[in-house]
Length: 230
Length: 223
Image (tube, rainbow over all chains, first blue to last red; front, side):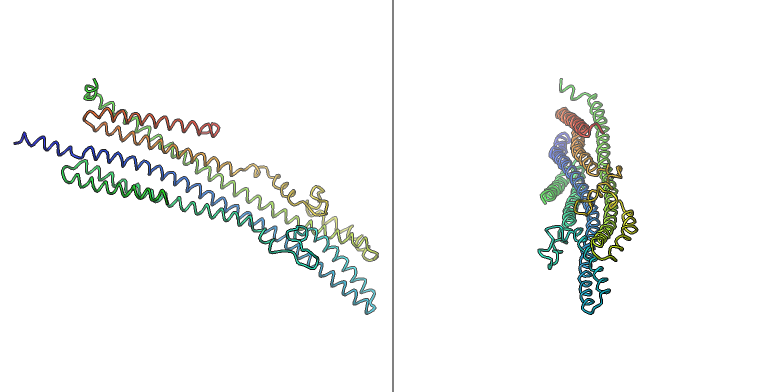
């Protein structure tokens, strides 16, 4: 009786062993692939993080530069308008003084008008609002196109901020993928543990752990695919 | 002969030695991958530091350029007023112009380089701010020499190398698995699993060496 039972027992201990080895090998290969994908996602997240920081720096520097330029350009424009107005006022004053026979007052006002007009003319040559055809008024009565100037002055900074946002978004996507792959690797470790237990057990319990391990392996593989395509 | 070899107790020792060698190689490869990853991180850090330095210097140069532009403009406007007074028929204005030219203009011109250096004067009487900025930037050669993009390019190369070296480490880890399998195996497939393990190990080793060699030459001999 004992002699007859021994081969059956040996056969039972060998059952599913090859299947477990094959499953463990598949788990190893999938884990290796997921580890590679995790490393890749991490590298891409780092590169995107670097780009987002670099673009933020460039945008900030560009904002400072465009702020200095706008301040200079708008101060010059304000000075042009102020001197032009002053010249006009002084000319009116000179006219009034002449009408009231105040020749000395008229002469003083004329000098002031002359000075203001000379300053206004010179300032106009310094102002982008009068020298650049994109913003220069069509006639002397019109105002320069300040709206276009504001759009153009901020264009480069806006472009950099857009690139910074794109890099920051890419960082979040890749970082999230890298984190998710770590989750998959943890689940893979559970599958390894279950196949290891199955190898140690015999009979029905071995099959139960093989099934549990396979379900977890398939779920983790599906999760990996989902992360990859998303 | 294969059967004899398969059953030989020496095979156990051979497999154990091979496993030890592969383990050490895998550990070394993992260390190297980590080193390459750190080098990529260092290059990113260096690039960002250089970019901060460079942008700060550029910001200061622009600030100085526009500050000088304001002063130079004041000089140019005062000069225009003096010229207008000189060309007028009014004696008071001419006297004012003479005094301004003698006392005011030289002092206004002394304030900044932009108005005192002929190089920056344009034909329309305004000043070349771009040239002034370029000269200010060139006056700091250490800042001009900084190249954040070069550091970022280097970090990309290290990251790319890290990616391919990781594949090599995975191959080495897979070979370790097959070798462990051959150690546990007792039947005839033992030699086959040993051969597969050794083959994957050699392939992984060649892969690792080739990746190192390619990126070593791409970086111009820098490890």
